[in-house]
Figure 1 (cartoon, rainbow, N blue to C red):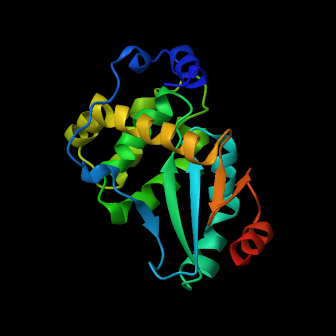
Figure 2 (figure 1 turned 180 degrees about the vertical axis):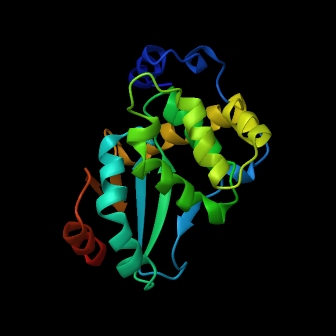
Length: 199
């Protein structure tokens, strides 16, 4: 585990930094690609994001609806999401998101990202309880939520995928978008996103 990630998780009161490395396990369908758009779209855009990143929230609130309507639903772009949790809360929320069926993934992460002020940044808030409320509205039972939140194997696997993204694309910040093979960091607006998607 990279030192920066280890420090971040420990600073957030996390314990995963002390857990043993992820062993090779059978493929878990919860770790399969989460994406939206045509498999034959001429451009694949991968977003590395953290559910507790305010810049990621800004992108999903201000830019993603137009990207979805004008580029993804029209077949020009296939959007792929890769977890890049910056803290324990984001890590556990990512585990919950990945425990939804693939078709429910984007609506759930969009609900979390556009409502961060309610569950991520409000003072004195019970993060887990607030995320559980949003998960319940999306159809997840409390038992399923508790199982996903406490699934250390899934959390380790998400961290392993984060490390893979760090190595593959030298991800340093969230959000980071990979347009084909071109890496663009920051919460870019629609016009920049559309230009990069055509390049």
